[in-house]
Length: 239
Image (tube, rainbow, N blue to C red; front, side, top):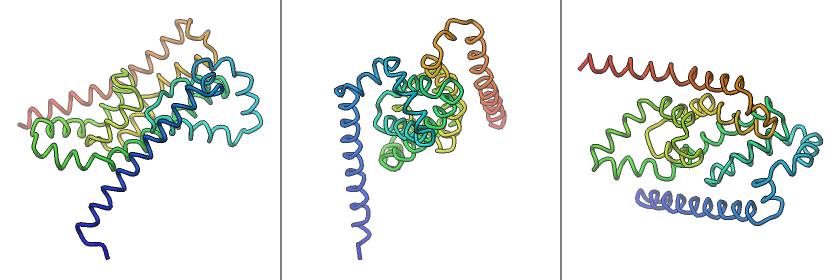
């Protein structure tokens, strides 16, 4: 029977092993994307493989979306760029399906990465660092209390790269639910732009397209900001 002291040690080594596996995974994916001919073409010149992508998708209509989502999650967990995959999704699936699959993939990636980051180091930061740093604990509590707003603002304003922001959220008190919902809703405009580049880049030159996109941005963010300031005013009055 493992002792009470042995259990934390086993958990510690398990975290170290998982972290090492993640680093090895990131290095492997990075090598494939930057040094293999297919990976390099897909990432740097996705339009050149447009025909191959559409042909493969047409022959694998069930597997293709699942493969797309799995690869997206793999890239996000490995902290590698995902924009090129969204462009490729637009090329292969078209505008509407590309956005739908892209948002499903982004939400899955954010959820899993936040959970992983929290398990790897979130509890340790809360217990070891925040306990000794009052200001840091206060900031973390503010982030946690406004998690949905923080996630959506990050998605809409691109304050941090997608993969990096997911790990950041996992190290704070932002809940998995807020990270998932904020990504599902707040990530729509960004996903739409990259998918449009692949599906029909001519739309990017039309003012109607940008009016709609900016309108979506405002519609998503303004109500959250109003709610935040109302909550802040109520808290101030209660004090």
